[in-house]
Length: 94
Length: 207
Image 1 (cartoon, rainbow over the protein chains, first blue to last red):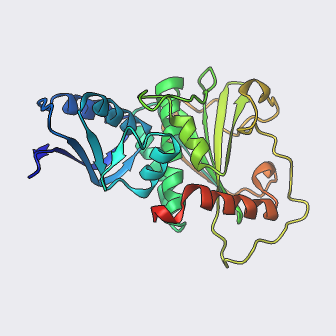
Image 2 (cartoon, chains in turn blue, yellow):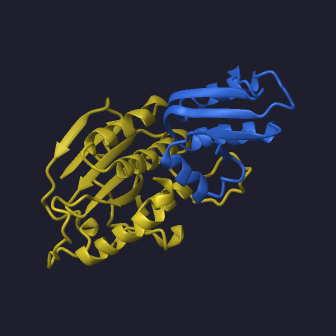
Image 3 (cartoon, each protein chain N blue to C red):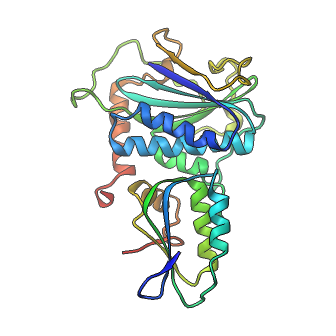
């Protein structure tokens, strides 16, 4: 996790995210120091794969953040977010 | 052609299953491979997390269709839910419904088989020809059917119930015995499905 120049908290994910490591990510996200005014950004540029277990972690993080967005999700993830009605909860950075 | 592999009931088997699919479909378009990987991951996760069962992953490929089957020995049937946007779980089968050309659940005497189908890339890009006589009625439960209506006792899968406890093994079998007719779809229907799937899943706005 790092702070970008705008003050947003950026969590960079890479590799593959599924049920085998989602709990670990959930713990890591929970350990991020709370910064109520700082937007939370998940940078998914390097994330090759994510299934619904990863989406669950992101939804949980969004519920606790003042604002949260996803950066560069893959096309298949965009499609899933839109198809499952999650694009409002997990907004995609424009 | 049918290619199959058995996986242990372990968390890492979920990644193993989707990598198996990805490798076998390596020459297919990216969007097909990604959709197959994602749906496989969801079904494999259900086996490990909910059925608590070893599972077999089988991929059937014809000129028209890619069909992926995941069979386990767990009790109970998966149920497609409609979670609210803020609920964290319950989207596995919903994702399958959204991405698959077709899918279904087939109960078996000692478990169940969940399958999904995607359009295969044709070799020539030309419209597919009809294969008279290959069309058979879809006998497994489809997504239009309620789970309680899906019982088809004769539709057991081919996984060997006696070997599910064995170490993961690789089985590569040629099909050709006609037993798996239901996924040899009529070419016209397959073409329609393909068109619908392409529009539904991968609009130009996404690529």
